[in-house]
Length: 369
Image (cartoon, rainbow, N blue to C red):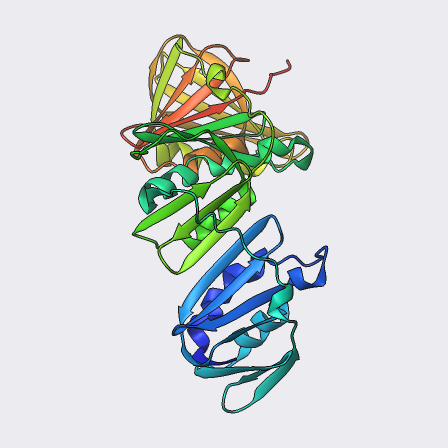
């Protein structure tokens, strides 16, 4: 194999791949990156048997072929080379990277040992717009659990409807549900995809404007991002919670408030809340038409913020994990948000006004007097 490509382009493509390659793999080959030179392009692939990523870049292919090398070592070498063309040559399992003023030689492994990424080419793809997929991920992915003992909750649940996609994630204390308009040509069963895989997908398609092709079977999902990138992931097994029944149908109180003002006030009181349990109290003052946010840390201090709001319903005081509120507000793009509540220990729902359909349910924290 012999191929010439740009150092800057190669380095930028390697960045997301190096995050996927496992540092302690079950087999040495899984710590490697597969290089494939063919048809005027260089393909880069990593696969840990659960999550796979493949990215292609334009290159001058002098001799087609394939080889694998350490993903970590290869990425570090390329990132430190000067911004010029690199010639990559593979002879048997020896790989030489020549950048003009110097070269590296590293030991590789045969491409034949590298496991094949699932393609699901025999499955009819569902074409999604990048914007619909991006909105769905942004509005829900942050709420997935990181507790591996509750594995099904570490995933994002995707439901396919005739004219929309519904994305849902929960960690047991909060729930984010986002619906995006997206025609789906045929009925597909809901799937639960590991959040880790989708975070890599979200980064990979950050500037993608075209369509994304989705293929899935009972155990795998494949996302093709244009013709230049692919993400493959196993699906999570098990029954996802019936989250829709958790969202109240009616609310006794409705609070409308400027999103940026609420977020800024929460950021300030969070300084003290972070010193003990991240708890912020919100006094909903219907008479004054304002929210009074407060936090205190014993022996350190206390703080209070007042935020104007439009309030319907009776006054009440409720407490939340301030991190949960801020994480929800940060993914909303609307000027104003609504906070819908019933009682001080019942689920509250936060949603953006005039934006894509998003509901963010947060369980209050019981206030001990």
